[in-house]
Amino acid sequence: MTEAVIHMEHVAVQIGKQEILHDISLNIESGCIVSVIGPNGCGKSTLLKVMSRMLPGSTGNVYIGGRDICSFGRKELAREVAVLTQIHHVPDDVTVRELVRMGRFPYRTFYTIASAADRIYVEKAISAVRLQHCADQLVKTLSGGEQQRAWLALTLAQRPKILLLDEPTTYLDIRHQLHMMNVLRHCKDKLHLTIVIVLHDINQALQFTDAVIVMKNGRIIQTGRPQEVITERVVKEVFGVRAEMCRTSEGKPTILPVGIYQTEEQP
Image 1 (cartoon, helix red, strand yellow):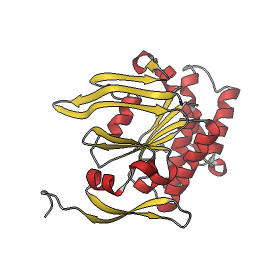
Image 2: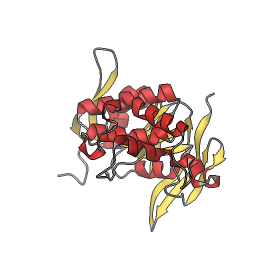
Image 3: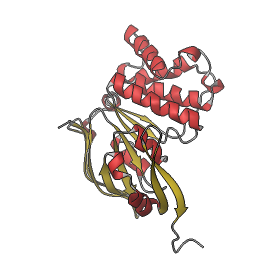
Image 4: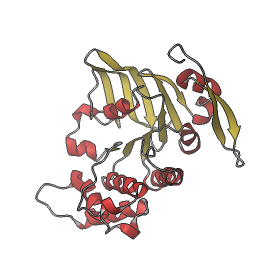
């Protein structure tokens, strides 16, 4: 059985009087791309924040590589886990290479200059996301898709074992969404990463990820292989959407939404 690089035991998150996550227990295996899907506000982003220690659980435990996440120092944890959030502040005067170089912070002290190893890993990260042609351009001059890949390169420069991404395709057009998902699969295969990715597009989960976590109301509803978990019944129960399962010309499964089930809140 593949080693679980992330293990969560009975984790709950409560903010004020509201419980955001309820009794979350799961294992994420090494070397997989795992998608997290569910309706808005169900706790997907909160789950990633707990996995990265950006947000502490109110109860329960999180383990990275079998070790309690609370026992890691800040830089030590950054060498294990890198996070790409939804919103980034794009610096005015920073090039792609300078931005990616910031990802080497877990391996340097404040006073040290970039080492030969730092420079090698920066160039490898830029190459992995295929931005060699604009490495010396200002980040702010890039397209939205290129900017997202530049931020991804920053996380890759950390040389983490685990990469957590919160909706990295949301603001991209269809072409750049597909390109980003292909880049992630390339990085997973070449760099042997474990990737956990929050997605809105169910078909991206079906086509590009190895496992899926389905969430609703702060709970995990189901986990497993996307082709087995993402069904017409699950789409109905979780999203309130009537859908039909189809197949592409290549035989890949895809979900086609065809209607909305009426609820008491809807007219």
